[in-house]
Amino acid sequence: MIAPSESRQAVTILGMHRCGTSLTARVLNLLGLDLGPDEDFLEPQFDNPRGYWEQRPIMEVNDAIFEALGGTWYRPPDMPSGWHRRPEVEELKPRAREIIAAQFGEARAWGWKDPRTSLTLPFWREIVPDARYVVCFRRPTDVLASLLRREPNTHTPDSANRLWLRYSAEALENTNGDERLLLFYEDYFTDRNRQLARLADFVGLSWRDVSDSLRDEVESVVDADLRHHRTSAAEVAEAADVPLEARAFFLSLRLAQLPPVDGNSELAEHTEPGLTQAIENFLPRLRHAVSARESFETVQAERDGARRAEREHRVALDRALEELESLRGDPDATQEEKTKEIERQERALVRAQSALEGERRARAQLQDSLSWRLTRPLRWGKRALSRSA
Image (cartoon, rainbow, N blue to C red; front, side, top):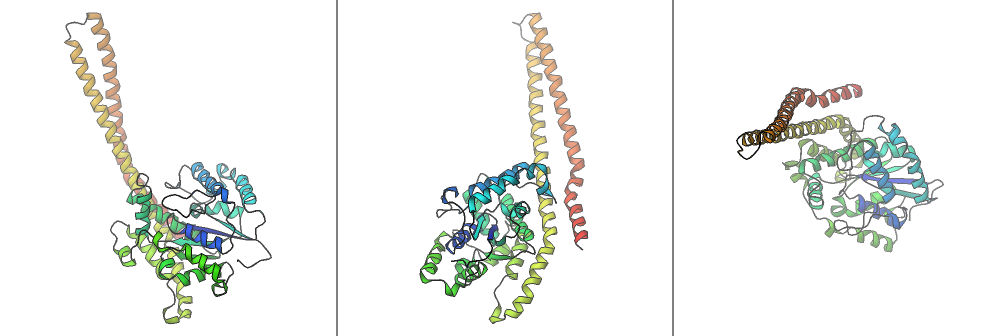
């Protein structure tokens, strides 16, 4: 079990959905980490039959944060500097403190897993200031396949890739300077002993000293059959359906975390911090690349919407004209009926013409603003880079 301590120790498990956060939480739970009451865990589903090990009350607070900022976990909102001190977010903090007290009581070693916390960590840092972090990563190609299999109506390849990049990059950035452990999901299956030893060491255990029964139980949850999607690093590098910035981020991070070559741990000690720092210095560029892609898709969606609206108004205009002509030639209608109906149709015609003209103006304005809106992330990125220089 986790070594006793004079003070309480919180461990938070971060990372994108489908990146092994549930598996990591369960392993830590078996090693002695209190994850809260069983009755508050999310129920297992077909895609996670052994459970999510995720506390519903914490998840609900994270969802409330996203909602207050105008987003969801799968369409995260903009979260500019200081977002966690906005009034609509501040009012959630008393509830968060109540949850932590109720869920974990006086447990010496405790923690939670919710991928959403990768983005909302500045909020939770004020609730639990001294936590340590396990950050989980997985090949973006496998996450893409897993998300599209699990929720085909929620994600597109583009949205899933952006989501992976945002969660992964912010989990790394939000824990910069903290005590953290970076894990790769693939290593549970390709380098199991080293992976479990690193995890045990992080929570104060020596994996060699773990009892045989506990070791067997931990290893039993690492079931290769649960790894549904498997791609190699070479396939990630060549994946045309994954944006270049996502591939570069993952492969660079993977390189930074490779085990020592030929036992040369001294070399690893020097190269790993440098590579990881270089990746973190690159994060502003990643952010503005993702933001530029999102801006482009938003403008395209708005433009397509304006085109659809224009077509609909054109159809309505043509229909009004046809009805007007038909009424004028109707021999069975009285003159008074014709006059009233013609006046009504003429008013409808004016409205349709006005709406059509409005849609045309909106499209023109949208096109005029396209350049400005698409370059906004670049201007933001330039300012961010100049501040960090």
